[in-house]
Image (cartoon, rainbow over all chains, first blue to last red; front, side, top):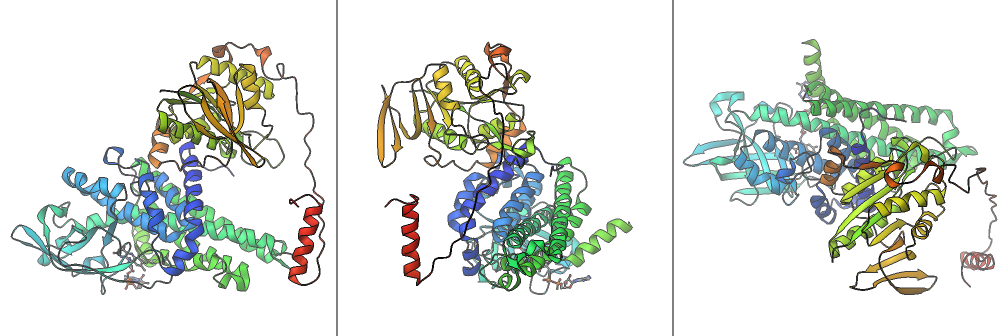
Length: 380
Length: 259
Ligand SMILES: Cc1cc2nc3c(=O)[nH]c(=O)nc-3n(C[C@H](O)[C@H](O)[C@H](O)COP(=O)(O)OP(=O)(O)OC[C@H]3O[C@@H](n4cnc5c(N)ncnc54)[C@H](O)[C@@H]3O)c2cc1C
């Protein structure tokens, strides 16, 4: 089937990324999930190839690709290992991107080449034990003291937390100013008072070292403020707009992988003397899955394309994230169903896809929050 | 030492369910057997310096394969494309490539994939070498540059041959000898954001319409038929050990495994 939106560049990119992921991540995807192990051996190859600076400008060491290329890369990586897709999505779109968009030239020079080459890994630290969807209620503080920020924070569910070197911390720089008192401070791993908590024992995405990060009286240089004081929530929202394209692409990749496996299995497994694929009930499932995957892809690519055109992208990105994540859950659920008992066993990959898909409806804004965002845009 | 390597590559049809079909960007890709040839050239360039030209003959979709070669690190890309070329057999193709290679002189080494995944004759490499009178070595697994004759290795059954070859020469590259490197993302961005592929017509390489296409092709595919394989299934009986022995005996008798 011929595809709209796609150019020669995207085709080459897709083939090339897919080949790399099948070769490098394919053989270990199940094992790193089971052992909850971050595959440094592959990540160290991805760095020099540009996976950690997909949209960063070439003069700062990035690959200088467009948002559509970014979506395709996250899709293809997630198709093989969603946990590594998550690592790249968070690093590229909610850690590196805000530094590019809101950072000063000095901050660019200081962090971008290191992040874009994968020599250092980024994290986005907003969620706290008592604060999730309602981001404006955070209690972390970064108080101006002498010539530094005195930062105290307890951040949980930090993707890449166990390995991150450069963390965007959302904290109150002006506790009296409410929503307008929240800022983003870039905190580097290793400074005094920086503690990485235990890794979460997750249902899916297990190869990603999601952890808490706690900061106890950290003294962070004043020049580590990203953007202006009080601009935190605006930076967060801008980051999540791009982030949503990444998470949507990730959900799409998982769904595509589940569809691929379901088709393979349905053609191969025989019951009642014919392959499963000959049974109409299975055909209906496959048709629904293929349609969900296709629709998700069109929405994800459209959102990316709008971003490349500089058009407003909030609603398109929110819709793509909402739809792709829910489609991924439907598709992986049916893929398990088509595999029968084997689908519920770790002998087949679909159970991993089923677990991995689930969180795409939760992070970077739950489905419910996305519906609120979309409804607000639609209702005006 | 600064060498000029020319790698001949083809855009192939990825899947042709009915045997033949129109080539579109969606169903075409760089011939997988050409990737090791490009890799061999890139490694030589890493070692000795110099430059690499990728050369292709075919319809305009070949530009995508050439851009991909550029993304891998090839310095220059040339597509010979002309309506008159339609229907060219391997000899006519070899004439075209030969003429273009002459145009690209001076050069030291002309490299080909061992075959294509969509028409699999394995003839274009050796025929091109013959057309322009170059020494030729097939299925090369290793290339060692020397000041005089280059050392090249190839495998024959259980023997490894080391050859000394005077340049310029032409070679086909063993498909498993040079595992192609993953393409850096920035390479793809740079090669595609500004496509830098020269397109040459027949007149640019000094050939006439009669030399190429159907008119210049002494052979043509008269018929294309899908082969149906007869499959049978026979169950071997006994303990697993007996079954394995029976299987080995059977395969040995059939000549499928050495005795
Ligand atoms: C694997 C993983 C990785 C993560 N990575 C990161 C990260 O890198 N950085 C980071 O900051 N966070 C991260 N998170 C946290 C994630 O973004 C939050 O879990 C998410 O925003 C939801 O917050 P919560 O869990 O506190 O749920 P809550 O906000 O408590 O929500 C609970 C339920 O109530 C619903 N709800 C809440 N408010 C409303 C409302 N007003 N109307 C209707 N329904 C509502 C929600 O949709 C949800 O169903 C990660 C989480 C996971 C599981």
